[in-house]
Length: 350
Image (cartoon, rainbow, N blue to C red):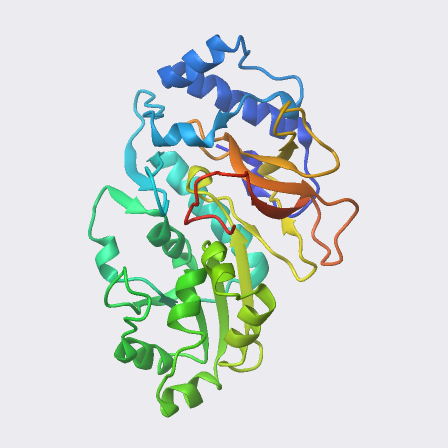
């Protein structure tokens, strides 16, 4: 269990404690996940790193092709989460009971920093049919369910999960009658198609202008860029449909790092919680970079069911220097885009 998770998300971190917890996870996965152990042995990598930047990583693409499950004695695997890749093979990430609990606490602590802890109706731009599987879930519905701790009740607004325009107005109307404050979640491109340009009946438009709405979205910016939609126009369109006190929270995350998300603050920085870290690596040499653009390695202390505690992604970014005007402490970074010719993914904000 991560002791770092017991403290505020964006406070100063004890790097020694973070390294100890990461080393313990590496040893755990080396013992109980044979493919991960073989990978370490092939690279002559030790399970104990002396520095955070020396912690071994698993390349994100391996989760598409290898069963990377750490089935320790007594561990209970509760679900498998599938990535929302728009082409090719989905990643499959095994989640055990311990990780599920930690991931829920993590996402709640991070999101509370941006939308507060008050419970209110959560409107999900997905279909309730996406919940019917007992053991396998897509990244989209898992992201929506991370908002459950903030929900007084949940409304699923789409009739067809594959059709962003299949908005069920009766569900929206019902939700609008329950509270003056709401949360709306959807993948970025679905939120745009279903909500921002939608022609709602006049009475619903009038009701929305009286509501304080926190729009929370992730993933799918590539599709919006293809439609010439930038972040400024996206936010402006959403906020124009609702009342004072509303906000838009855009976060980046991977299915291989469930529970750890990186929201964009008002100063255009993505913040790293104290139980996680980001290393930027040169794509050719894999050396860590203090400055400049490189490939993102994401780390966390809450992944027990699968060796996704340290993952080299196919996303590009750079670390941001100094402190942030928003007042949050810890590492922060800018997300830039994808590694050239990398597969388009549906669950990351690029």
